[in-house]
Image (tube, rainbow, N blue to C red):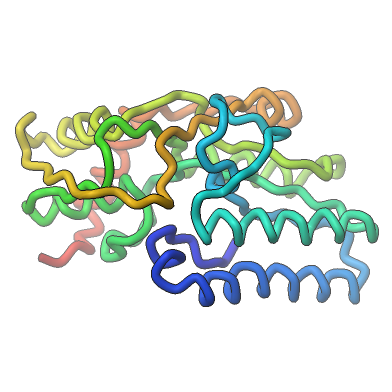
Amino acid sequence: MAAQSSGAVSEEDPCLDLQVNVMATLLLVRWCLARGIKRFLYASSMAVYGDGAVPMEEDALCVPKSHYGVSKLTSEQLLRLAAQQGISCTSFRMFSVYGPGQNLENLKQGMVSIYLAYMLRGVSVPVTGSLERIRDFIYIDDVVEVWMRALLSPHTPSAMYNLGSGAPVTVRELLTELRRALDLPADYPVVEQAGSEADQQVAIAETTRVCGDFAWRPQVDLKEGLKRMACWARTAAQVTS
């Protein structure tokens, strides 16, 4: 799961993004093949889809808009080749994962953690792109549950899976829920900024496959998840002004 996971960083330095994500995947695959390892779980991303039809299905055409999405899709193709050589490769296309443990000092990765960090600093929240963009937020505990089921099951399929909640949320709605979680006024300042051509406008997971194959349903909705994350962030006190 170790990788370069920031869309912003991937646009600033696409060469680094490809080296860290694609080359690392290739080297790991070759290492596994050389040692007879038969299972490989991969952390992919909703970024592989681009702005396709929603909800996004695993078999849909992938046309990524960002270098990050290209690096993830390329890695998936490397795993497809590895599967032909006997490794069972399971890829989880993770949507907007959030929760305790995120680095609140990193203001280039993680929509929830970025906005939360600014609010904890008591400064206005810069939002790059439209407040009407739609995302699918999934709490970290729900993500870990699927990964553990895949890891521990002897019958995990060699397949692609979306890992999201399936619930569409606009950026505007997210900001409203964050204000509530932190007991901030409804008019807490937000500054809209020009978006990036690499940013997806709508990303919603079709979760039928992952729910069926792993007998799983997300347990933590956005309101509860943000409440838990806000409590953790205040306790962690890791944000500097």
